[in-house]
Length: 345
Image (cartoon, rainbow, N blue to C red; front, side, top):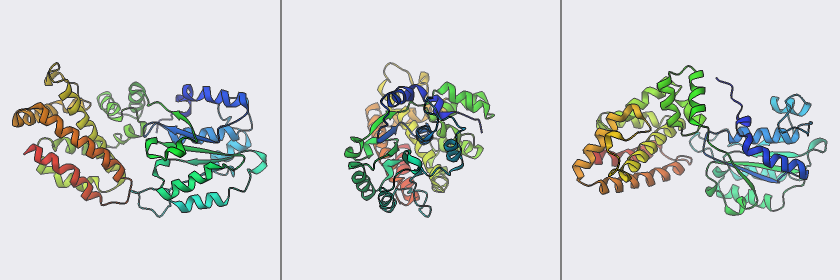
């Protein structure tokens, strides 16, 4: 896998606050890193914690060679802990439960080892259950002395406002499409496939990496065949996407992007002919153009198509939240695909 320094990529966002913390000789008790999924929020939080614990205090990155940095690399740094979902939890849920925060609160009376800071990482903080979030809030109301909390969230609106109000918030930027395309080509992708994958990623390196898998890439072809002959692949799409959370997420990504493209085209249809529209998945232009032509000809009005696509976009947004809770994947996918079947008929 191509080596990529996520912390270095985000240094323009990080260096200003880090210099200010050094100048004041004080770190924020709660730091919230936001930004879209797959841009390295957890890695940045981990590196910031490592930097705070680093024995060399005059640089703006972990030195990687001191005793603390070495312990962090090996996972042996006692002053760095991470709250993760229970190991026995179904992968589709991945929620953070109250028991994990009860244990954290029980240890809050303990100071950091060797007189330094105690750092706590909480990735995907928006996945805290309501009980866990309230427990966390009580902990933040009176943060233990010498403790620093790092939270990450792709959508901070899903966090309690009272938690966000106690955080210093840093928003990390998506990766540039040019950089993602360059990195994918280093992974061995052809330039055309790397370009399409970079557009699919929309700035998320993790999302782009999915298309390095030939099985995922080939399944994408099945997805677009759905817009030609939905009945022939309806059940196979459900079976495939229900196998694990990553495949479900890929299906949601593809549906969201296609729906977004349809909506954008319908808004500019009067000034931008369908044949000239640049689709995110440009290699599927013929399929998508044909689908839109059939839809609009059948209904005789672009407004009806626009309303349908907007409704599907709203349904997909809800499905995102449902997908991270315990649920029946097959029923969820069926519920998402069936309206498209009716629109195609």
